[in-house]
Length: 269
Image (tube, rainbow, N blue to C red; front, side):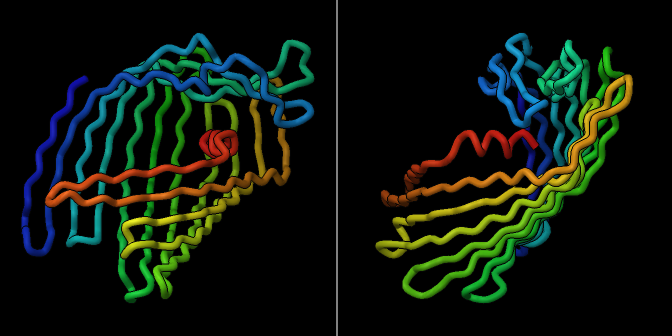
């Protein structure tokens, strides 16, 4: 809808700069969230979309500070009206748990993000990202939910001979608290191999990712349902990237294939 952005370079040589921005946006629910069909995950638990979800409006203020060229610190405040979150409920018969998205009255989140990318050696590049978030969700039916968590991820890229590359990544997703349910720590491990052709203008990459969830709890008025289980999620992806240069202008094309259902499941977290 509306957006404004201002940037000031404190020191152009050292790469010190400050960026302030504001954006308002209409967010429409994805087809995955609107899907009314039932998807069984366990013998007594299933998820379904909500075709009655309404779009919501968000307002975001962001302050980005760049410290040298490889360090970034970002503070963000976002306020959304009529947003949605996942809710777990008992079925009418009381023998199953239903998880579905619903609209909530308002949601305010505060985020502090720090990231750095370092070329430690000619053959090794390390990127680290730390994200701290605090959310305040208000609903008319389920009351108020306060959530805070810290997410840390690290990705390594090793450049081998003959334009071969090897990447290893690790992401720790902490316990997340929804309106009336909790999901404990998840670990996401990913690795990939890539090969460059024609001086790196063409890159063929394959990647595999493994995610493990160990604990889930759903809260209800008459108690709670608690489950401890190992439910790994694995997906595989192949992509081709091509960089074409036309003088001072450039064109970048990416194509890939992936297991969409597995990515949707990972995205649920």
